[in-house]
Structure formats: structure tokens, C-alpha cells
Amino acid sequence: MALLASGEVMARVTSQVDNLPGGYLLVVILFFGPILLIIPIAQKFSGVLGGAIGWASGLGSKAMGRGNKFLHDSSEYRKGEYATGAKRGPGIVTGYARRSTLARQGGVSMTRSGRRQYRQAEKKLIQDAAAERAEKDKGFSLGATDATIPAIYANSRGDYLREYVNRNRHAMTQEGLSEHQMQQRARMRMAQLEAGTGTTMGSRAMKAAAFRGQTMDGAGWFNEETHETDFRAIAEASNHLIKQGVMSDEDIGGILGQNQTRADFSGMTFSQRVGIATMGEQGNGALTVDEENLLRSQSYQSMRNSQAELGNLRTARKVAREGGMRLNATLTSNMDGFESNGNRLLTGSNDMDTLASEFATFANFQDMASGASIDAREQFATQLQQQYYSEELSDGMRTILQPLLDARGGSASTQEIMDYCRGNSDVRANQELIDLFTSRRREYSSGRMSEAARRAAMTEAPTI
Image 1 (cartoon, helix red, strand yellow):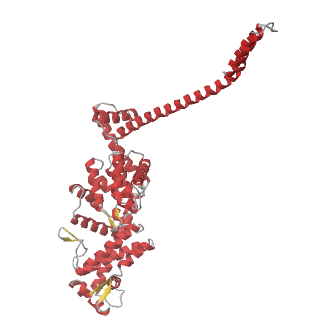
Image 2 (cartoon, one colour):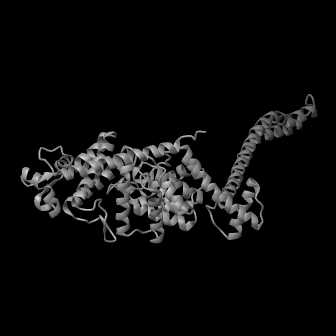
Image 3 (tube, helix red, strand yellow):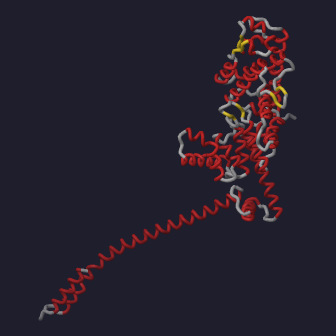
């Protein structure tokens, strides 16, 4: 502006001079010359300004594009939740979204018959998925066992986050996690499950996959504090899945027998495994003390015929602990935990038969553990160190073991009683006891071999 003003001033002053060479031409040049000088500078700055305006408008367009993409993705995501059943809203919306999705992807019509076809297809999907998993991977696991149980009960993603934090709050608090960190872990577990199963949290397929994942895990359905199979948790989950229409008790019984590394499940007969689900359904998810005692005893005794070595350390702990308790009940007649509906759960028709049978069973498990890890063998060796004094034994057992007690000064360890039953002790036992023990050992060993042969035959291809 100063340059333009100076040109105007010079032009006015020049115009007042008389007889000026060039006359009015010089005045015009002085007046308009600064304008001509400014034009290149103005063009340069206009380019910079225009570029800035263009950059800002481009940034705004990108932001608008991202916003529109977010809204579109969110809308599609919600449609997917409705379609899979993870998110439930008004019946007409949910039903329409799910049927329309299947209509596009599977050719199912939108009519009433289409709804029926949809339900049948959904049920078949769950069955086919379970069968495929069972066939392809015998050791299938979804990851952390603390993550799969909440997935059985959750009906949505929000349900899962609450269920996970509530069930694992104590353990996470001991780790020193804050509430925010607990939520972060829950979201991470949920993402792992959805990625591992390819389905949405809260859907029926997720519930079925979570139950099977928990069962197929080497640490699944195991109480780490008591070293016991958590039959209460299985019964509770079974009751929930049956009421939700996700599985039947036969489905649950079949899945419980698929993990060949867990003899506490696979060793039980199919009817016994179905019985767990049936008891849970009848008790509305809860087991009575007698029912739990019965299941624990059935699991222990059925493993005598299992062809699986006790390579799973949790199973070894369970068997060793349960076996030690049964030996104690045999020797002392303390039936706490070994009665169901007034019936004894120990094997044998009389004191001598019970002594031979229970010690032969424990010896059989020792043989199974001998091919496993050192830790597994130590679990059984610890149980055999228990010392019993004459006054602790029941009258019948004291009479049978009197020669050994007299030779050992009124007490004997479980290992010494085991050797006494075998006939390997320096104190000679009653021959009837040795014969009973030997026959039970042969019976259980042959039963185990027969079971192994039967299972091997099931896996062989038929010959023509």
C-alpha cells in the first residue's frame, strides 16, 4: 500500500512542474508503475494462500471420509451382531436381520418356512463345527481356561466383560491389576476367543465352542486348590447350555469323552458322562454332596481301564489324592466322602476284599504313572508315606494286618501295607489276601489292555 501511495504522490508532484520533459506520459508512468511492480509479488503470495486453502479443504474431506467410513462400518458391525444372534433387539429387527443375512448368503427365503430352515441350519452349523473340531484336533484348546467359562454364559460382548471380571476378580486383584487393567484383559481374552472360533461372543456357536474348548484343555474343569475335577462347574454349565437349547445331555456326554489326555473324563463310560449333565439339569445346575461323591468315585474307578498314561499332571494329582483318601477310608472305615445315598463307594464285598481291591487299584495307577513324568510318580510316592498306628485302624483291618503291626512295633506305613498285600514283605501275609490282591491286579491290567485294544480297533479302517 505504501508503494502505491508513493507512486501517486510522485505523479501529483510531477504534474505541477511546467515544461516537464515527457509531459503527462511521465506522470502516467509514475502513477501506474508501482501497480505493475506489485503484480508478480501478488501472484506469488496468492499461490501460497491458495495452496493452504486447498490443503485445509483436503484435510476436511479426509476427515469427513473417515467419519462416513466409521458410521458405515459401525452399521455393518451391528447388522452382523444381529445376524449372528449376539445382539438382540426388538424381535422384528433381530429376526429380519438374521434371516436377511442368511437369505443373502445361504439362499434361505424370508417366509415362515425360511425361519424354520434358518433354525435347522443354525443347529446343523453347531453340530458340524463340533464334529469338525473333534476330527481335526484331538487336543483342541481355546487358550486360557479362565476365558472360556465366562463365554459359556455370556449372551453379548458386554455380558462377557462383566462375567469375566466377576469370575476372575480375586485372581486379578492378587496380581495387582487395576479395574482398567482388568477390563483390558477381559477385552483381550474376548478377542482371542472370537479369533479362535470365528464366531461372535454371545452366539450359540460360541457357547458350544467354549464348552468344548474348556473340556479339551489339559487344565479344563479342574480345581487347582483341591486338585479335583470340578464336577460342580460342569453340571452348572451343562444345565445352562441345555436350557439355552445349545446342546443336549448326550452332546455334553460325547464332548466330555473326546479329550484322551484327561483320563478322568475319557475313562468314564458314556452313560456316566451323560449322567453329569442329567444331574446338573435336574438340580438346576447344582449337585448334591452324594451326587458329587458318586461322580468322583466313578471317575476314579473308571480310570483303572484307561489306556492313557497319567502324563497329565493334573490328572495324576487327582488320582493320587483320591487314591490316598480311599486307602485311608479302607484302613480306618472313615466313610466321609465315600458314601452316596447310604451306599459305600469303596470296592469289595468284605474287609479283606476291599483291602486287596483298593490297594491293587492304587498299584495299577502307580504303574500308569511310572511311564509319565517324575512329578506324576512323586504324587503317588507321597501318598504311600502315610503312617498308620494300630489304634487308628478299624477292627477288621487291624485283625488282617496284625502280623505286620506286631513286627513293626504297632504301626505301619501305606507302602509297607502295599508290600504286605503283594507278598513282598519280610512278614508273611495271609495267602488269601495275597491271592486276592494278585487276582485284582490281573483283572485291572487285563481290563486296561482290553480297553486299549477296543479303542485301537475303533480307529482302524475297515477291511473288505
